[in-house]
Length: 206
Image 1: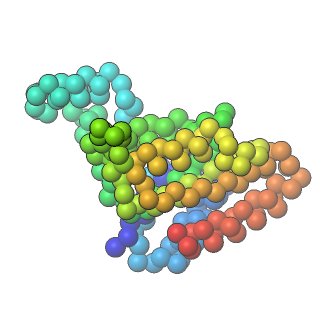
Image 2: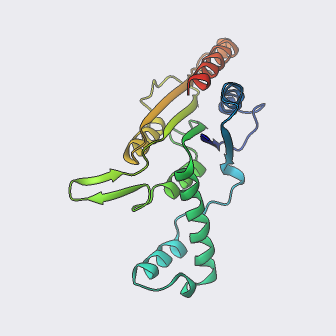
């Protein structure tokens, strides 16, 4: 059975966020055309994904030194356990949907924290004499992003998502942008309506 992990990288609802309109429109169309697939939604802004901080770094170094997990401080154990859960969740998915808005020419901070949790040497990529090699093969990623202006994939956020997925070895990375809604407010509804129809088509073919 194919498993789709849907990463919701926005704190607002579909009524408040254009990227979330695209997110839910995609999922509805996908579920309609892939009824046998399993969909797991990951709402980043209500999920307790640990940031890479002193607890995690010192805990990992402690384990690298040959110590056991049980010898870690309780807070370190809990953070490492949760961090690993998100890594394993990504590895278990056959397909991944990521939806976000462009914030200050960058990805939302919670999306960056999640990307840190799935970029793990020895699990999703490994270092070799020829350079890093992605281990996350056999996956497809669809990245939906809403932009107030027009960037055509040249913004730092979408390029970062594409590069990190390529780095991890993902077989196929597709990106779709809803653009110009703030630059052309008079036609914003028309632009959004047209984009959502394209999102439905992308979902059916994903």
